[in-house]
Image (cartoon, rainbow, N blue to C red; front, side):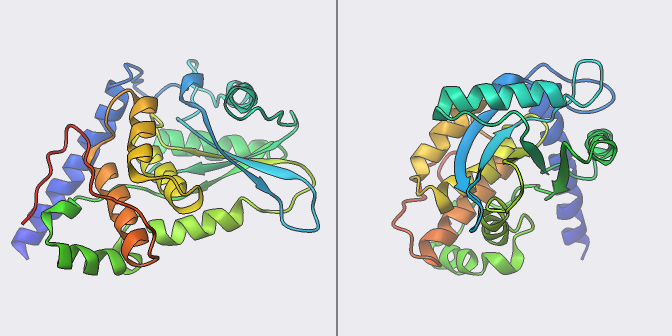
Length: 265
């Protein structure tokens, strides 16, 4: 029991340090919350038709926390960044009156930003809403396990992964096809828009866009200008193995990031 307690406390400390390092890498740390909003962090992911009988289209984007330099919610800046990126990266003209559905990956350590976003949409319900799906990553490297144990753990991932990526990806697919009287833009974000967002968006790339593992790693690295954190990478890699072993995706999940040496036991 004592060893388990030490491991849990170590993981919590590692998680907190990882969150601070997230923003330090961007040189955008602020005392009251996390990172300031960066339009450069916003990227197009997918276009989704609303369920029948609607003829409208929804969109999925990723980015970082919309906190402005004056500590307010950067709704206008985020909206403009989405419109711009839609044209640049997908050649789509998104209606300016779109409804913004924020999918926040923030956790309970990030109270200022959680409340900032919650309070904004409570005061402006016609502009959008926010839903939290807490993401923390995984403390376990899949390549530390034998192939047999790795396959067993990957198949059972829905029953034990804290981030619930198998469940969340199915929910996200259904959610993004929501019928409404106007276009909905779904916006995935954490603080910096790199690690947890890379894990969550990367899972979507694998599950619904049929990307290969190396393409996901490369895209996340290009967006963050570095490798994503160990915790996020391992959680994403576990999900990749889940797709390979449980859903029989023809995918090779072995390739590692440069900063994560390949290891097996």
